[in-house]
Image (tube, rainbow, N blue to C red; front, side, top):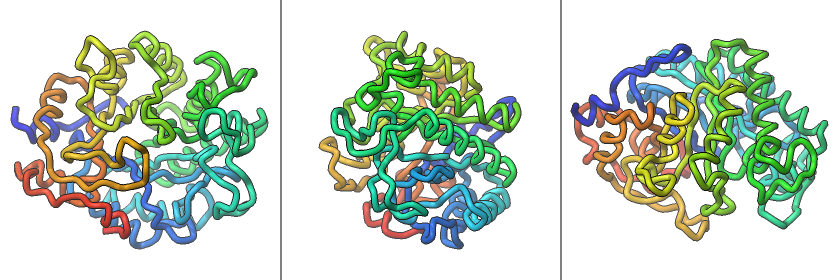
Length: 370
């Protein structure tokens, strides 16, 4: 099987069919003035769909909770104007033969008071008021706060379904709100939302169950999770496959259809004694489709190991290892991130066998939509 054939096979599940195995990874662009998708955002997503991407997962878009946002000019997923903008994005992507899912997002304690929005004075909301272990900088959520947040995710999923999105993705990775509940370092609660792994998962389980109950069985629910956090690249939720299984099974039971397994480098084994990456282990343990991601077709990470915001450039790199893993059915889908910022027609290059001719990615490309 050729490189292109391995990745260009259609993906078919009981709820979602895609023309190939390529997913556009969610990437925050801070390019939505007024928190509303505009003509530039519409064209940005349309070009990637026209370039052949099977499934676009949008940049993180804030659910309708008063403290969900933490950055300027990110799109909201509530309010008439924002939802009307997203409807145009859906229409444009569908017109090019692509499928699309919004990434539903709450930043949690990453937010700081003064962030734009209807209540800029609000601090970050999180399980224990911590963005990093041991340092309280925000508001420790009450049970009522948690219930309001769950309801906001459910409403966002209902709106996505109404607008014609093909799936929804829940952002439960990278040290944002849901991941702050998962991570013992930032979750010091002693109630039903803290302590044991099952308790720390509870908010995610309630969100998934709420979406499934409200939207029915046919809306595909994707959940993105990670071991690493933006606060600590070395952080791990699970040290063994057995722990990962215990983490995943309640989410499967709640109704997750696809897991988006975020790693910084897709080729790195997740646990000793096996070459499987995080997506490979997730698929093996759950039987659910899994998306792999992490520096696909680039020779550098997004950020350096020290965690500083010195965005790194990258040039084309071989995907032979990726293809071998796909041929072995280690995972089902491949998310491409920065390479798609530099090359909206990445899939067309894949089809033509010209990935070695990809334009390099550079941090300057983050300054505008193209």
